[in-house]
Amino acid sequence: MLMLRKIITEAFLWLNITIMTIHLLNCFTCNARVGNMKTGTLCLLIETAQGLALVDTGLGLKDYARPTWFTQFFRVITVMPFDPQEAAVNQVQRMGYKPEDVKHIILTHMHFDHCGGLPDFPHAKIHVHRREYEAFTDHRITHWNEYAYIPRSIAHQPDWVLYDQVTEKWYDFDAIRLPFEPEMYLIPLYGHSHGHCGVAVKTSTGWLFHAGDAGAVYNDTSPAWLIKFVLGPYDPYLRAFMRSHSEVLVTNSHMFPEFFVQHTSIT
Image (cartoon, rainbow, N blue to C red; front, side, top):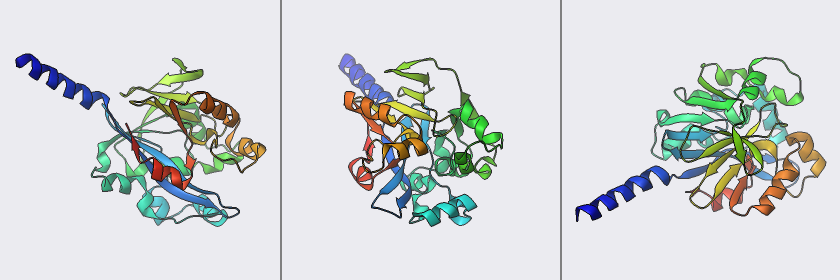
């Protein structure tokens, strides 16, 4: 009996440690004015052994209350509900958590629609590639997409954890191991921004590979040259990878609305 009890206890401990849920949130709806392209910005809320980790934030509460010129510009060229209920902090609280329960935020990159919500989680450690952090903080505009760096997103002086050393391979991609369980990696995919990275997360059935803004693998309407111009060179490689690895769920930052209906969470 004691042996059976020990086995059951160890089994529950194992489950509590290794079976983590990834919640897939739409933290910013932004639709095209021309055509029928509708997208939501995918952010991941991951239950880890080190506490809740959020991958990207979408817009923050300040962006809704006092939009910057760049956000206002996007409101002109796109169609947005501009609903503060989509802010990550509001979604986290509706799930029964407190903002301070989010211990870590992992950024694919630091454009306004990916880190605008950082001030809503002032106690979180911010994990990002060093190249991206330096491009954001040097205050020089060397490429048009750097106008999407909005300084007030980090005015609260968050606690940074910076990465730049490739430590291993994840499939055929260079990878940087992140200090979390489940197993997670930063995958450098430079191009859309100076230090843009994807994030790979191990699940119970395979992997989730969130490639951020490095591609638009489900967009078959925009021409390849436009995707490359806006998002960088990786889209064809990501599509080929997705065809070759059915065990990996590949996502991009701006997913179609049906995706969020089909995928609310995975383990």
